View 1: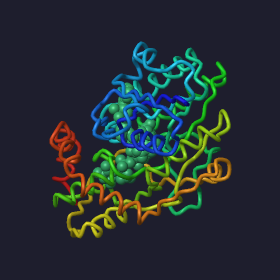
View 2: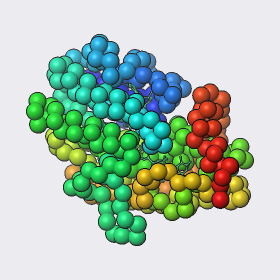
View 3: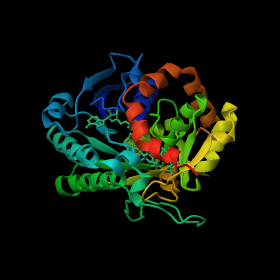
Length: 342
Ligand code: NAD
Ligand code: TDX
């Protein structure tokens, strides 16, 4: 058996990764460390094999907790744990620097002490900043790191501490940089699940600015397959960009969701823009395709349908979140914006 150590496994992408590995790699056991922040949800891990998946509640910044949880000489560490929402990082960056940078350093230190074979850092296309709209430029692995939000800056800093662990201490590292994920179990602070949840409740849909910012969307199961292949086939020290060649303007995403849900476009409100709002992300995934033998399997149409169906069929999951601290979050982020909507 191979043993891997996953952080952030109770979140959206980490839990999809765990489900993928348990189903597709029957020789792998998983130890999963997650602090269960507002974004961590044990419902995301319900009904998993308790023998091959062991959950431990703990913070990646807590060195003793990480020392106790990480198995000796395990095959890999996959670091999904992060503060992941740009808007929250604009309100307060402290937790972003703590978890995303200090937490990554702690994991690297402990991985080195424990003789871990490979460290996989889950990064994001946002570290490369914003591309001009209507250009044929794409993010490649050679693009400069030019983060614009506190979230992106913390993820870029995390990439640098990973690089330093490799250059200085010889840790075997691989970094993956993916674009915007969507799919089941995404916390409804992010664009797609927020819009689905609001539309299902006939509430207004707050679109930032002119709605023409472009994101490059990928179905979460395609992302986690790429992460697994980067671990198994990726070259040490390399970065792999992961994307589905699926650029969409936000307003088109929102109207597609409304159409699929049979709700009127009149629910859309154009609201005050996000400060420092990146205009366009677009990923060239050629390196992952050629070196890892990876390709997307889920089309945008199928992915959206599966996502909408999941939120429709799992309204309890959404209402557990919407009935908690989320109410305060929503009020802080959106009340003033919606009052002065155009
Ligand atoms: P998420 O916010 O849904 O989940 C994050 C998880 O990390 C939660 O379970 C949370 O409890 C846990 N966590 C947070 N702080 C922790 C700490 N200090 N110690 C231990 N656990 C902690 O995030 P996500 O969307 O699943 O993103 C996962 C990773 O993928 C992140 O590293 C993110 O930067 C990266 N990423 C996300 C996207 C995207 O579109 N969502 C795209 C590219 C990369
Ligand atoms: O209410 C909203 N209205 C709106 O217009 C929200 C929440 C978002 N938006 C816009 C902002 C972005 O242009 O939609 C786009 C997508 O926003 P988010 O879902 O917040 O994602 P983004 O800021 O692009 O960052 C995401 O992709 C990269 C993830 O949250 C990151 O974790 C990931 O690294």
